[in-house]
Amino acid sequence: MEASPVTATSREDCGNCVDDDGDGRTDYEDPACCAQTAAMQVKKVLIVPGPAGAMKGHLSLTATLAQAGFADIDPTRDDVTVQFHNPNGELLCATVPHQRWKRERRRGPFDFGDPTGTAAQGLRKMQLKVQKSGSARFLTTGKKMDLDRYARPELTATVRVGDRCSTGTVALRSRGKKLVFP
Image (tube, rainbow, N blue to C red; front, side, top):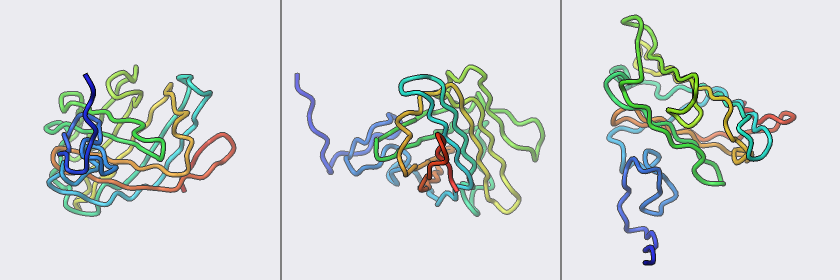
């Protein structure tokens, strides 16, 4: 049985980590999968790829998901998807169910933690902090990941919370064996 080719007229199937409609955008990078989109402002990225094929890489990303309009997002109610891609293609596409998030204080940040990294493809910590202004800060870190494919000059990050998505692309630069932004 031969697989049928993806055509530009295909429909994007949201949540399967595949570019079904062939437009170069996977799942929540594609506006067809989000009711509300926002431009992500990536503040800081650090990628230490590690040896090729080895599970020794480290990653951290800090970003503002939206300047406004995200005041009522709640990852304890809605699932969260994190996607990274570069010219190599989709690097990471992980959905964390809302049951895995917690919030210690009423106005405090939402936190996800997984010391093993198995729930989100190596990401061990995520934090979402909603500001009074409606902006939302996002932080994620991972270690013991195979990040060899990340060694390209461009990284696109997408974060979805419920039906809201934020995407941003940055140009990474080499600093020794690390890739960084800014």
